[in-house]
Amino acid sequence: MELLGISLIPMWIVFGLIICDVVTGLVKAWATKTLSSSKMREGLLKKFANMFLVGIGLAGSIAAVVYAGLPEWCTGVYFAVCGYVGLMELVSLLENICAMNPELNAGRVLAMFGQEDKEDE
Image (cartoon, rainbow, N blue to C red; front, side, top):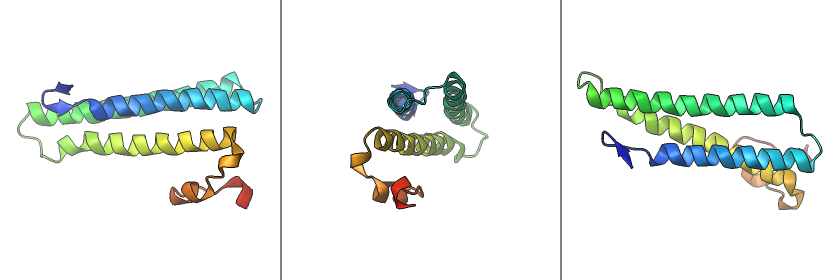
């Protein structure tokens, strides 16, 4: 899966992580009885913003391939954006999973990402 020699796999991985995060967020909200349409609307807006951010990174990489005058580092922006958004989604997934099953106690893992475990406070 390539577009003008640029791999689309990172984009599809990020989109898959976003979908998993939305699903686990809905399950977590249902399980904790905090399901709210306004929170869901706000969360979906953030997910669409992340998807558009990946699209902008891909557009920059495509422009760098098509227009030879652009600096070569422009092609790496797409992969950096995918890495950043993917990491954000992984942390969010971990938070959702830990909220659904407190027995996992992922305090050490969350601390690696700069998040503090709620039980340690």
